[in-house]
Image (cartoon, rainbow, N blue to C red; front, side, top):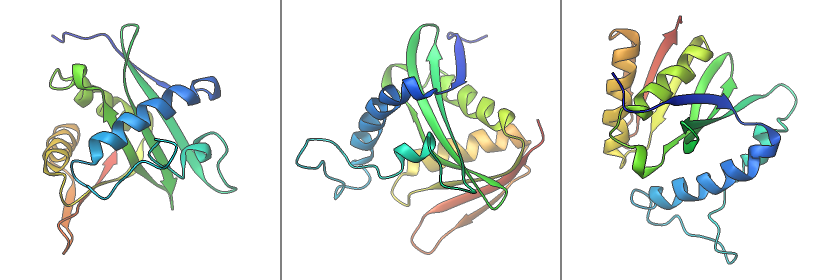
Length: 163
């Protein structure tokens, strides 16, 4: 039994400002792991790829998702497809919804919606994300995934979503 009412839906163009605002919170949180990440003179953290999720370059596939708990915003995922592999580019759950199971359920729902080959990559300093993804992907695949730790400590999981 869960204590949330999760919905995972593609973010429409009219919801782009919502994703942009949530992305600012995500980038701010990420400064814990990348202290050199700084806001610009406008006070905003730069993110060069946001527009591409609604206007991808020819041959690209990008999908933005929003998560809600009932009517409340809960987070987002940005997924791109490269060489027939889905890549979790960004994934964020708002603090009030963390540790509730909502993030786990949202990640698994995104994996279900996009069957095929997946790559999830975590920053070397982001140990909580490494543990989160290792656990979620392990549960989702029944342990059928590969993991590589790069020389810099970054971790990458590869698996297939057959759902």
